Length: 464
Image (cartoon, rainbow, N blue to C red; front, side, top):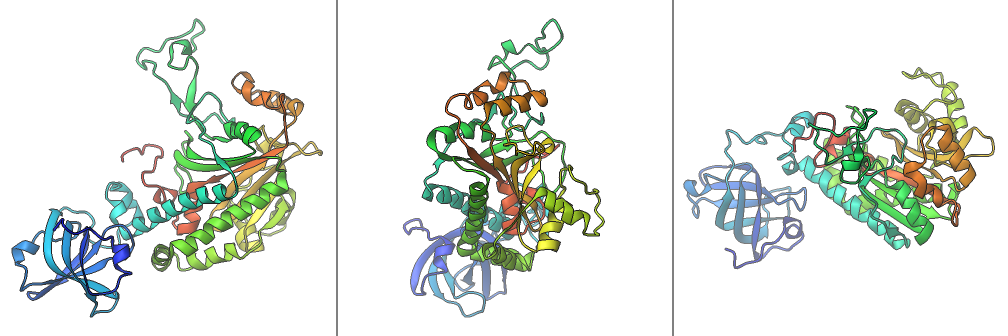
């Protein structure tokens, strides 16, 4: 059987009948009678399975006994025109090899219609379902499209560190990295941890963002982007939060807030359009099974000009809306998802870019406006998601940056290198961050962020 090269099912379904083929994959379903058996085989290359027809004059019951849902098999046979509906071609089996059986009594994916909650409990098997096959193929396509978009625009991919001694967000919710003996932690005379004995000689953590290091790259290479894992040690058990997630963070020298917004809108439209053009089968499955409005919602984003307005204008709309919100609205608050989604889904009925947020609710590195109250921040808000992109023009003034750091009592010891970029050849620059899993929530129509990453990390959850 191995003398012939295996053909992926995604390719087989495009071929004409009349050739001998070798196919390998996992059994989705098996049905039939004493004369004939039909097996739906899937190899992960497409959401569509190919039908294998076993003529029981050629095969014994014992030979097909191990061909059950979940089993892994190889089949050689003739690719012929399909008699039944649902597929154009099928395989008339001549030879069969069973690589791995799956006991029908214990294999947990025997039936259809499992809940997302149940599938999270069997994270080692859920990629074999049609749903998660679709999600993870789309995830790959989006990752590829991100690199293609920036490469084609002349950006350089910069690999920023995963282990860091600085907190980019100033939030403090970071995972510590240490080689110290946790049963015998060295202490200073004042009782604090003596990090001089640690691997790096100082406190180190997993990064919450590659932005600060990304700015260093932009101030040398012009336009860069990072794409890597980031970590937040927040005890947030919500459908929108993960402890480990991926971020795309472009940083651009000589960009101001308008160019930043233009790039963000172009970027996200490009990604959604790429999904529509390259993931049609997977999107159709998710549209039909989970979210009947998915495809239309994706098309509407590509064909719509995003609304742009200030935070102050947005708050004014919310306060005059007559809508009852769980979190009351007033100028100065950090907008909640319910506020963002009202602006997008109810008021404007299209994506919104909010700008000029109060400086008190935004990070220290954002450029301050002349009014002394707001900063040149920008958040891109999407239907069903809320904020999908957050960014800003960065503060290039050494004096203003140092003053803001002092106001926040952040300390400059771990940020000296960042501050020095404003001392040596500072320049206007801007950037933003796109949460990869937030993007995938929108593109796939999934409702829980743990269902768009292969192995979700969340509080009390690191099983797989």
